Length: 310
Picture 1 (cartoon, rainbow, N blue to C red):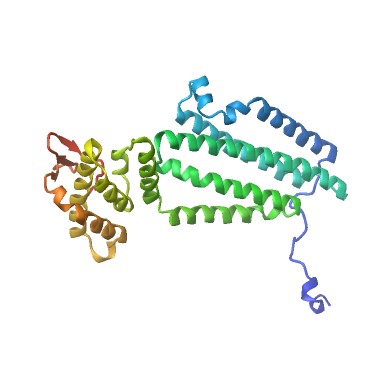
Picture 2 (cartoon, rainbow, N blue to C red):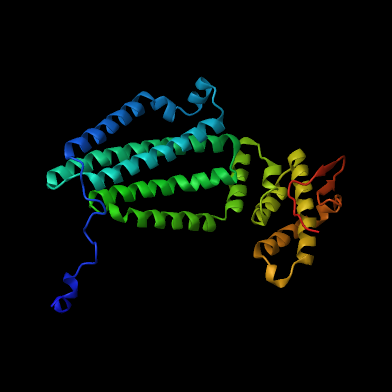
């Protein structure tokens, strides 16, 4: 007879059944959640200057920009994991038969999620301050992309909590991980780093040429454009590094097979074309042990970008 039932009325095995039968009383659960909410709220209020003080906080506490940003990110990860883990555990173990009890539980849980959002905002604020002071690197860019996706996960968690579908949070985490990875690929990290640091150069007059020259070929078009716009010592430093990179890439392209052809390398070589006349005054060579060196107008230096092949 079961086979004759309307397919729309059938349920999957285990659907609607908890993985672990609730055993924790509602009062006990509320005490735990409410206590954590109060503790968290007190911390946010008392430590508001620490969380959002920015430059003033750095000056007052003698933190470095790196320490201030890293502490913010570490706090976000720890608080996020512990808070969401606590809510997931209590949601699975707490008896909440009546709608009123579920509403109280969801309200206290939502308050905790929102307070995690405050820590997230603090972490992003600190990271932006760090980037403003020292520019973008790969690690800072990864973190910059991660924090908004963490915010998306918090929002998804909150929605699933309120509609009673927390068991699907694992799917949200998987989709968030996919979204984070796709964002990194679509963003073209090294090209983005060059673009952001060039924008910062216009505001501050400061750029780390040697770091930018250590990136992948995706950075070359932006650096080639920058070399044409710069002048002075920074221009000379950048030309040295690009000349070194150009020679390495030429040799690499000569040795590569069709199966190792890379579009970014071809685009990079095309970007180098307009700078060939500038490169003629530099001598680039590789030592017997593999290190690439360049002889500039006054001294010999080690190339920031190193391609290790013989």
